[in-house]
Length: 80
Image (tube, rainbow, N blue to C red; front, side, top):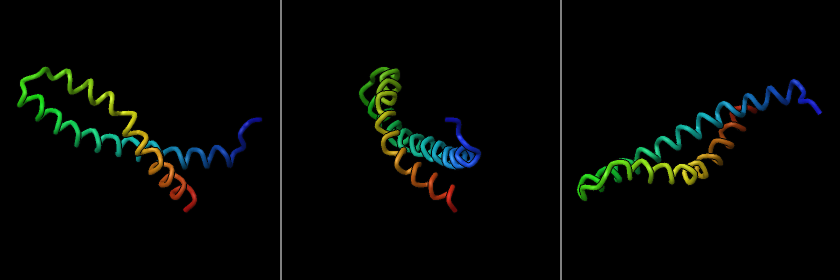
């Protein structure tokens, strides 16, 4: 069954704040952890590539924190 015009309108109005909030929350959480990881790597003298691998492994956890917030804001902004 094809989506109606109202469904597409609501989906677009919810998706934009959802994606924006998700990206912003993930970036803020990654930046906080990145500072700590770089400090740890510099003091121990390890390779920097370990930091990128550890941050890549943390991205799904940060998305799981940002998705509920993004859904809330997306729904609130679409229905305002």
